Image (cartoon, rainbow, N blue to C red; front, top):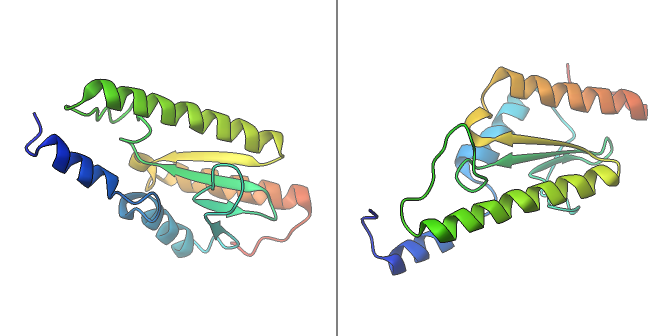
Length: 145
């Protein structure tokens, strides 16, 4: 049971920003900078507006919040207005698939990282591998490592 009224909860949820979230995008940006992974742009204007993009290498990185994108590992479903949130999260996941498919058809390599795995070493190595292999394929020198 929610501790606030539906009206208050609606107002709270409406105020949630879609970018710059501290537990996702800001943490990922800090990790990229600390590991000297350069060349990325924030909110690049292509399908889905990836959180991070390496436009020259056509690598797009989305950092998905566990609640908003229905992380199967975290399983944090809403306890109020269940029907609405189930439909909302399902729509978000379908949109994620459409956006990823569209970017891939346009030649982009798409990476999706869940909020709960942002700090895992394998996440960083996936990003490094993707950007380095795309740089080699496209004939760019990487400024990283």
